[in-house]
Amino acid sequence: MLHLTANALRSLSKSVSSEVALFCSIFFNYCKFFLSTADFIHPCNNTEPACLIKATQDAIPQFCKGLPHLGVPPLDPFVIDELPIQLPGIKVTFYEGKATGLRKCQVLNVEAYLEKNVFILEVRCNITIKGKYTAVGRLLLFPINGEGDSKIKIVNSIIKLNINTKYFKDAEGRDHFGIKNYKYTFDYGERIVYTINNLFKGNPELSNTVLQFLNENWRIVTEEFGQPVVDFALNVTVSTAKKFFDAVPYDELLNVPIPKY
Ligand SMILES: *[C@@H]1O[C@H](CO)[C@@H](O)[C@H](O)[C@H]1NC(C)=O
Ligand SMILES: *[C@@H]1O[C@H](CO)[C@@H](O)[C@H](O)[C@H]1NC(C)=O
Ligand SMILES: *[C@@H]1O[C@H](CO)[C@@H](O)[C@H](O)[C@H]1NC(C)=O
Image (cartoon, rainbow, N blue to C red):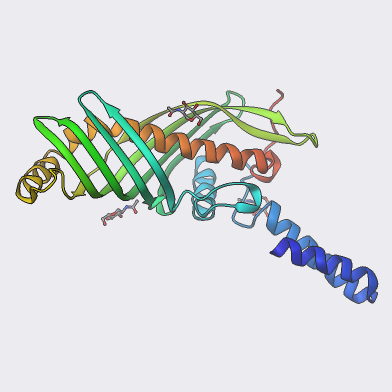
C-alpha cells in the first residue's frame, strides 16, 4: 500500500510543480526508509549485551507480527496447519492450530561475538497453543483414542538459542548476517496447563481423569512429547529469522564494522 502510494506520488511529482516534487521526494524517501530499514530496528553502536537486549526487545513485537513487504511471515499468531507427532507408542496429530504469545517474550540476554560467529539469545515466554487434535496409542500408562479440541498454555518457559552465524554478500554487494546452524535448550518453565477434551472418545469421565493426571504430571508428560513440538517451533522461528536477515543488510542491524570474512 505505502509502496504504491509512494510510487504514485513520485510519478505525479514529475508532472507538477517543484514544491510538490520536493515534498513527494521527501515522502517517498520516508516511505522507502520505513519499508526497508523499518523504524523498529534501533541499531546498536557496540555489542554490549545491554544495548543488544534492548534493541532485540524493541524489535520483537514487529518482527513477530510479520513483515510481508520483506517476505517475513508472522510468528504471532503463528498458524499450524498440521503437525504430526510420531512418538513411540502414540501418534498425535495437531491441526488447525494457532500459537500466540511470542510477541510478548521477554529478552533476558543477548550476546554477539562477531569474530567467532556466535550469537546467543535467551528469552522468557508465555505461549498458548490452541487447535484440534487426534491421538491414538498409549501415553504413559493410558491407552488413548481421542479427538477434539486442545489448548496448551506454557508459562514462563525459558529458551536459550546458541546460533552459529556467517556473513554473506547479496546481489548488490551488501553484507548480511546468515545462520549456519543452531542449538537450543528449552526449560518448560513454571507450569504447563493442558486443556484437552475427549481424550477417550465418548467417555468424558475417563477423559477428565486422564487430563487431570496429565496436568498433575505435566513435567514428565511434556518431556515425553514436547521435544518434537519445540524442535518444530524453533525451526520455524529460526527460518523466519533467516528470511529477516536475508532482507535486512548487516549495516541496518548493527553499527559495528563487520569482521573480515
Ligand atoms: C548510535 O550512535 C548514533 C550516533 O551517535 C546515535 O544517534 C544512536 O542513538 C546510537 N544508537 C544507540 C542504540 O545508542
Ligand atoms: C507470564 O505469565 C505470568 C502469569 O500470568 C506472568 O506473571 C509473567 O510475567 C508472564 N511472563 C512473561 C514473559 O510475559
Ligand atoms: C527444519 O526445517 C527444514 C526445512 O523445512 C527441514 O529440512 C529440517 O528437517 C527441519 N528440522 C527440524 C529439526 O525439524
